[in-house]
Image 1 (tube, rainbow, N blue to C red):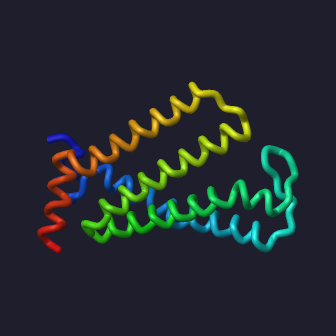
Image 2 (cartoon, helix red, strand yellow):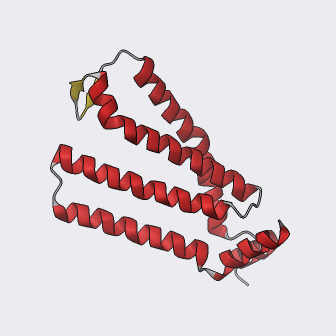
Amino acid sequence: MSLPERERKRNGMPFLLRVAMALGALFGIFGTSVGLWGLLRVVVGDGPFRIDEAVVSRAEFVAVAGPFLVLYISACLTAGAAAWAIWRRRARSRALLVALLTEFVLGDAAMLVLAQRMFDVGAPELVLSVSLFIVLVALGLWYLFHKASVVEYYDSLRNVA
């Protein structure tokens, strides 16, 4: 029996869920703090506000960076909530991880639109980025809903709760 199999049998939780729990806790605590600090600096600060080394007004900065900052804070809060749910062994952690994957896709789509507008990114780069995110999300969904050990783990949580 290999080491990961012994750990899973002892703990019951698949290894990558423990990794997601640790990373989600880090992003939840530190990422949310940094995001809220950045939001506070935009709201209360007096500048200078920069986009691609150019000084812009607060209104222009908020128009460009505001949606990304809100999405970033939302993703960090979702990561923290998913970490908490995994740690407490709640079945809803799977739904929170799917929500986090969805926020990653939305963030990637928004970044692609911004990159195309601001930096004149070409079609090959866009296709590569979209393809990479589709593969990563597909792997994440497969892991959560089709990998035998993860399905067994969530089925056992559902039976207990």
